Length: 86
Image (cartoon, rainbow, N blue to C red; front, side, top):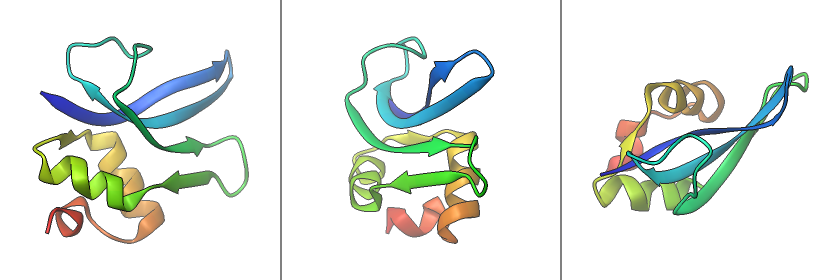
């Protein structure tokens, strides 16, 4: 099963994240099927970029969105993941 989640990158005490589509069984730092965007909380305001068309493709293909990513999408894009599914 494919899941869309955050992949932690960066260094100790200076993390940033990639938004990736991965197989559920792969480890957090494993190889991703596709990179959909990024999230960097170290800036003020935090940097957030997401390819919504690719997110919609993966969700329509049956991928699940992690709860952490769903809250980030809701916070920064002002849309819910349920809206992208349609």
